[in-house]
Length: 247
Image (cartoon, rainbow, N blue to C red; front, top):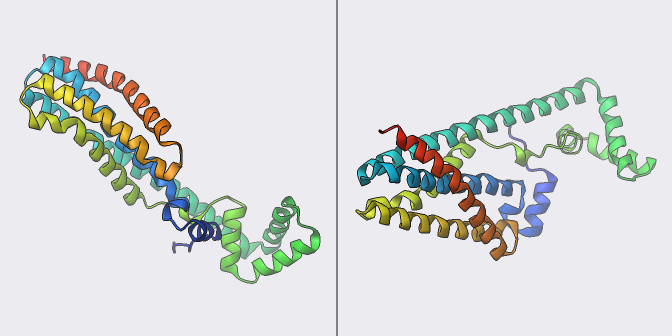
């Protein structure tokens, strides 16, 4: 299926605000923050759990690397499959709308009137809109896609792109958690430095995302830090369970 050009909404957002993040693509921040946060929290909490029982640094690193690899693959394939399913759904809706314009233009024309009637346009204004929209089938299709079924071309993501972005973000989040174990010999020291690094990174992540969300930086940083710290508790107990398998 040929890629549709940007919708008028996307063009307006780009022109008015001058940043790509202000278009519908800006929602990708959700995937990035989620994956980084997951990489940070799951890795440090897992390492915390296994460090108590595994004792030796090499065994902790090995367990941590296995967890990171498994998590990266899970994030990639989970993001890929879910995005692909969404993409197929959107494309099927667009193809259906395209067929309806070809096979039943009268019904589709009436739907345009109904849309503008719901916006408060009178009958004459509705007819003007109908004539302008239906004179070009590509514009007609774009209008029906966005206004009738609520799909913007910018919402249709590339599954591979989202998968790789999510997986890379997870890896990026895992680095501050496991890096201290490569730098210091003492496992307890590694764990303390790892925990401090993760908490710091969580706070920075909360601040960084305010560039997109426009939320007050301190509130966002503290919120991200607190939720991340709470999540570590669950991962810690998971790490303890896995550590028990080595005995």
